[in-house]
Length: 309
Image 1 (cartoon, rainbow, N blue to C red):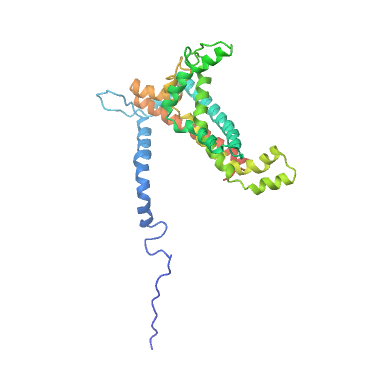
Image 2: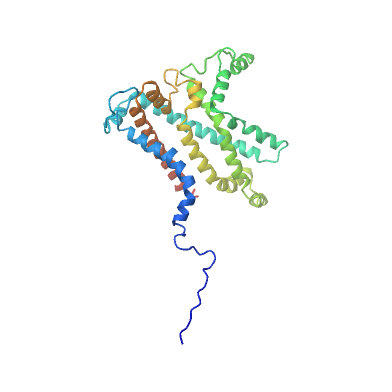
């Protein structure tokens, strides 16, 4: 007598042939999000890297030639580019640090049970909703030496006035840094405020019962919970600030005397004012490499101290 084996239906949730987590079905679901990234991000990035090893120029009738590392060798001896890089590092580090410290204080304030807290939170994100071009035009009016709000306020206080903040080589970069901090602080505030609201209130209450003061509660309860958010938003701010363009372009266009010429502005001028596409692409590659190194050092320093997310 032959035993008949009854065919059992597949258990629900068990992937069939070709339907596993790495099967064709999964790739088909990922394609709508993957194709725009490849076309709009990875493709132009690879094209820019290849362009950096050529002598591509605008209006050139001769074929573009492969020049190897010649553009990078020229950059190593370009003092103007090195100076712009120094200015870019000063700008990025200063703005990122100031944004974080001021945003942390504002987030702690907005986390308190205040009257009209909803209105204060709405006003805090107004700069974030404004385009960078509009912010730049607005602050140019604020810094105007004759009719600017800042000059009028200083004259009213008897502290003088009429100073050309954006046209003076000594004050141009600090003035632009102030604008960068003001424009970029809201998103940092929102991120830190979200981290604060995710901190369990029971921990604060327990620390208060144990007699911990405000500073000790912040150091032992608030900051450990807020540290992953602070690490992420600081890293993003560092990248955004180093790649800043529109705000500084509207405010000073890199002047006076190149004192606010950030690396992105320098590359823009080389590409679209002088038509040196290959040289500008090499600048872009160097900027990507430097930002990657800075970000790796920043993250390694934070993670070494136990800030693992």
